[in-house]
Length: 91
Image (cartoon, rainbow, N blue to C red; front, side):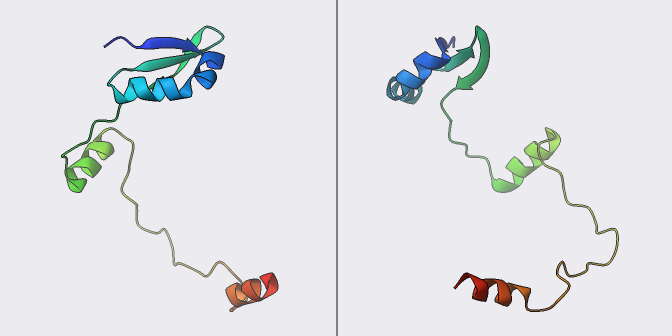
């Protein structure tokens, strides 16, 4: 499906129209100084399970599984009660 190409200032002025077109299934491309910079397209709902979606995103390189900590975890603050002191100072 070929998208409609709009200049940046046109897109700002016609956002409601763009949203209507996208809801109708069309794709809209935004250009800035003659160069395509963005594409607005409909989102198609997915019946994909969370596990398979995560696996797909890992395969695409979008997500990665967390590694093991390299050392022992230590508290970020030096003095206990920092959160309580912070909250008290905001009152």
